[in-house]
Image 1 (spheres, rainbow, N blue to C red):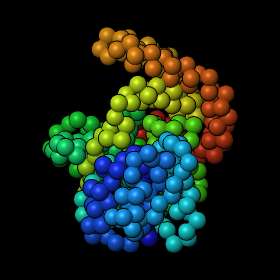
Image 2 (image 1 turned 45 degrees about the vertical axis):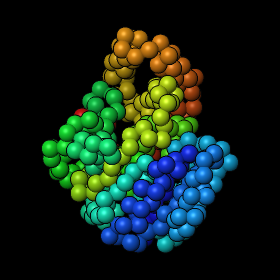
Image 3 (image 1 turned 90 degrees about the vertical axis):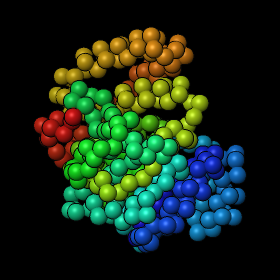
Image 4 (image 1 turned 180 degrees about the horizontal axis):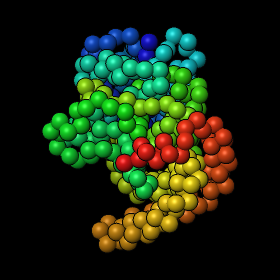
Length: 315
């Protein structure tokens, strides 16, 4: 039994396509839960009138992605009938065998999550995400983003982690690893969660037969400055919380150099507004270092894999 958790904020224009694609799934043993972040559009009314099978959890404010999915996950865990939890953005359309193929990815007990192949909703021969990775010197990235899909990522394999916009998890993962870090609000919360999964010995399996179509940025249009700020802030926390100390110290000078170069690129190729939001995010991340270090102590005490293993799965 699967709980499908969909966070939503003013996303009524996306819900029809998303919900109908779930109605058309070949695998039927699941229930859908919409976690609404206090939308001001008619998302809730639309859902009640057109998709009455969808359970709705209404929040009192826009809590961001991490808090919303945590509410849905905890609600799902309270129902002992659920074995898996599927997180799904509201701006996604799923192929009819999507859920079935995600389940097929659980091939061994060590697999905590399964990642899919996400294609661009509007240009369906273009890749949006074929698994999340971290480069050998520290930058997270979505594999295949903006590449034409020529089958280059059609191999089933273990990868770093899944994009939480469309990923399925064994419920035991949340009971062991915990939940998404709500201090992130949005962006890189899945990178952080994937890191913690790896540190505790869970693996992520990529099944390219599970395909969905994503309207990238469909729920966050006109917030590029906010996105930049949150990414810069959260990246500091990801590194401080999760990197084994020898890797962190080895790459710290490189991290600083890359940030400086990135900020110069913002000035040259973007705008002063983007640059300033990046700086604000970085400074905010620095102010949260004590909080990140407190979290780090708990995470590193629980670590079950070696630093050498972690280094080996960076790309």
